[in-house]
Structure formats: structure tokens, C-alpha cells
Image 1 (tube, rainbow, N blue to C red):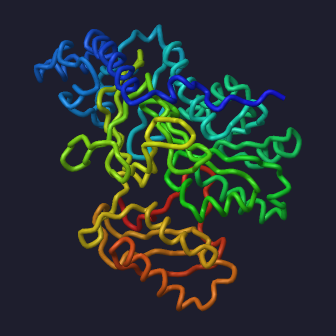
Image 2 (cartoon, rainbow, N blue to C red):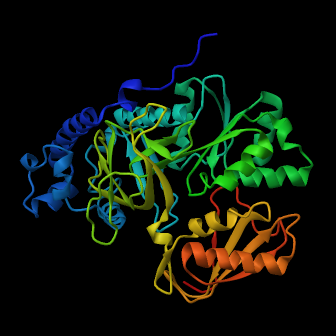
Length: 441
């Protein structure tokens, strides 16, 4: 049997640094000219700052441009229906409209032209191939049809895999697809594999018997936490790799290879990614260990191109070179700046707390719930955290002290840890809710 190729798009995934710079710069110059001609929002935004087409010749010039904030997109949609003043093509050219989930506010609508759809499909296929999805896989998709994640279905088909649309909240249907159709590769949120483990335990199903070969997880931080990843891989005998996209920009443009050291950027030619200091706005040099906020700029978008869009995703660069041969730098998503909590002057992300606590698996299950009594980001210490202990946790008092000490050493804040029975905290089919707000908003 012929061996599968190593890359989906070898040319674009293995560009040298100079080639990458040239490809991105050429695409940006063309896209910026298109934006200034066709997007009322950006033409006004940049013209007021004295920025013209001649000022943006390549990616080195991006620093001249102001950021685009999420609220600007909401305002643009409100005052320029149906698809906003930042839109750059007539509605008759739009063939599909998605919505963001609206978890941080009012949902925004994302339109795609025929060309946009193909660009989305291409970067999604690069991500899927990087994460190990192959034509021989049968892929149930436990994701709703209205959100941008539904675009993955078309990419799965284009990759050559067999797509089984399942939808959210239909675990019985997904299990039927596994049993009757041999479904063996699942693309889902990072929380879903744990929900599936819990479901199988309740139903008396041996997870190893399901024949699942791989999970491609995203939509929230957590898929790369070592102990949690191992829990899933051990439970199913499957490989877990992480992916990421952005609803306003591209469905998928990051993918984790077999070396599992962060997600490679595979969006060359379609998007440009920067990392900035979220406080000063300064663009940071891409090198191992750098932390900051992801910024995206469209390079090949017709309907709703975005210039220097602030994602609020806080990431750390894990590598700039990889044995797999992909040259896109790799990242791990730490959390969203919107989710950041400040405890006694220390910045803390819920996903980082889960990461630290999960290092004690199997003494704990890795499931946590943080309780806050006043609006974020400020949290009065000690932070209250419920933690599921494991089946054989040993002395619970000693474990409580151990967890509180570990959190203080690793994340520099004091915690009031309450141990609860395994399986007692909520399990989520979609995205995990790690913070419980005990106040009226």
C-alpha cells in the first residue's frame, strides 16, 4: 500500500524563513490594497491616521497599523448589517454565514465567499494532516452546524476521510457511529474525551474496545496538559493532538505534529500571526519561551478581512524548529486574557491552575472548579478551588496541603482547596467551564 505523504502542502508548510517572509509580505500588500478599496471600516480607520496603500509593502510594516478590537467588529455589524462595515464584498457574493459562540458577548457573524471557503478548507486540511488525520479514518463530528467548527466537515471530506455529522449533545449517536460504522478518529473540544470516558464508565463500556485511533482536540486550552493527555491516550489507546483556529479569522490554522511540542502555525499565505505584549502592544520577536497575545492579519480574505485583530489568546512559543520538517513556529495556548484572574497582584489563568493540579494525577482526576464571589479579574485570596481526588488518593488532608503548596510554589498565590469525590464535578460535551461565578452580573 502506498505510504501517505508527510505533509498536506509541503511547499507552504516547509518554507524557509526568507521564503515565509516573502510569501507573507507579497500577500499582505495585495490584501491591504483590496481592504483599502473595498472595506468602509478600514478605509476610514486607516485614512484618519494618515495611512495609505503605499505605506504597507510587507509584514515589517504591520506595526504601523492600529489593532482591531472585537468590540469594533460588534459595532461594525450593528451599524452595517448584515455583515458589517468591515465587510469588503457585496452580500450576493457570500455563500455561507457562520456565527461565533458568543461566550464573551454578543455573537458575531462570519461570512465566506467561494474563495474564502476554499482558503478555510486548505488551512484546515493542513492542520488535520499535521494532527494525524488520514483518508482511512472515519470521523464523527460532535459539533453544532451553526458555529464555524461546522466548516471542519467539508475539510474532512476534502482530506479524503469519511465524515459522520453527529452534532452537540448526541453522544448516543456518536457511540452508534463507533459501533456500527467503525468511526475511529474524533475531532472535538478538549473537554469531550473526558466526557466520553465518564459516559463509558456510567454505561459499563470498555473504552479500549471502541477502536478509536486518535483525538484532534481544540476550542479551549487543555489538550496539551501532559497528565490529562496521557489519561485520554491510556483510556482509549489513542493518540491525542491539539489544534486551534479563530472564528473571526480561520477555522483552523494550527496543528500539533507527532513530536507533540506545541501546535505548528500552518496558515502561511492565508493569515499572518504576531505575538504582542498585551499591556504595551509591542510586537515581540518569535523565539522559544516568548509569551504574549496572538494577533492575526488576513492575507487572502474577501468577505471580512481583518487587520491586526486582537484575539485575546495568551500563548507561549514552544519551538521554532521541529524534527517533522514544518517551519511554522509552535505554540501552546495558556488561556484567554479575558479569563485572566488577578490574585494579590499575580496574573493567573484557569487553565494554568488545571495544568498544575493535573500534575498530581492519579492522586487527583484533573477536574477542577474555581469559585469566585465578585467580578473578575480581581480575586480575593485565598482562591477557592474544588478538586476531584482520585480513586486511591491516600490521606486526603495531606493531599489538600500538597495541592495548596504546589499552587503557591508554581503560580504564586494562596488557595483554599476542597477535595471532592471523583465524578462529582460537572462534565462537559462542549467546552469546560472552570470558573463558577457566585454573584449576579
